[in-house]
Amino acid sequence: MGVERFPGNFRVGVLNQRVDGVMAEDGKLAEPKVSLLCLLSGRQKFQLGAQEFAMDATQSPAALLFQTDAALPVRFLENQGNPLIKTAVSMSPDWMQVIGVGRMPSLISGAGPLAYRAWKPGSALVALARELVENEAKITRMALGLDLFNGALDDLRRRADDHALVMQHAKHYISQNLHRQISSKDVAAACGVGLRTFQRLFSQYEGVGLGTYLRAERTNAGRDAIERLGLSISEAAYRVGYSSPENFATAIKKAFGVAPSHFRQRDERIGE
Image (tube, rainbow, N blue to C red; front, side, top):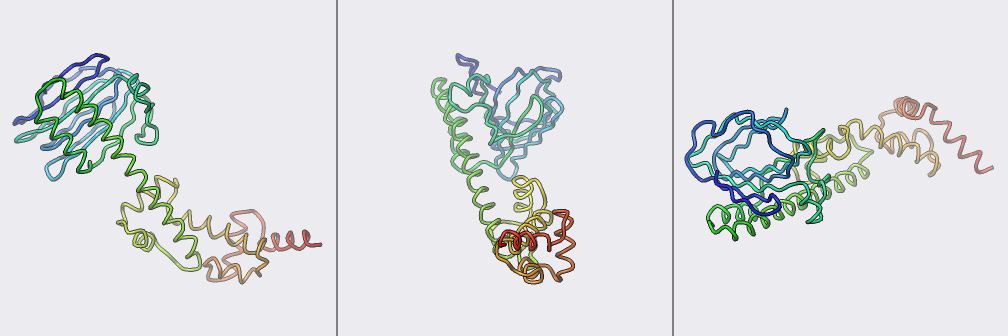
């Protein structure tokens, strides 16, 4: 890969050639940095510290953004492409403060000294990467490298915004349908996303599966129906989707440690 080096340890690399096999020696240490890799054609597999990355652009481009806070060993496992087309933009972590980004906690994730995010880049980001490959002027490559990095952050922010809207819609749909027996497939369809995408997003945002979330929402809504709306235990049970008052009472006691009647008694005491 041809790499242009600029002040402040800012680097822009481009590779566009036929490759069949590992291209670099093992054991090299990668200094703390922030890197954006865009693979436009071919496949590449490498290990950074204990984390292995497999980028495959045989069907569509792939992108990887990572930040390291310590020097990590790099091991290259596979490089294949006819041609292998790739861009790499790297900078020291100090640059994140200069451009007002910080550690990007909402865009990348990880434990220890390595945080990262792999995704399928949008068309605008791919177009920038291709422009970088085609332009050989050093100063232009620096400008395009910065544009590419900022474009990647914008791409990830848009995805985060889209995902947040999906979750907002999902939670609204659930709250309006607690009286029904709903599945992940139902919620995914209501949100207009695939089942696997919905399950991944739900787990990522809520930290639990839909079943656990539904049980908590139903018991909370059931308690509210008794305590605030003054419904009977039977009415509250059916309102939040339980097949019988007995099942509802069991769920309430498991969630709150008391029987549903406790909340009715509390309501009556308050009214005295």
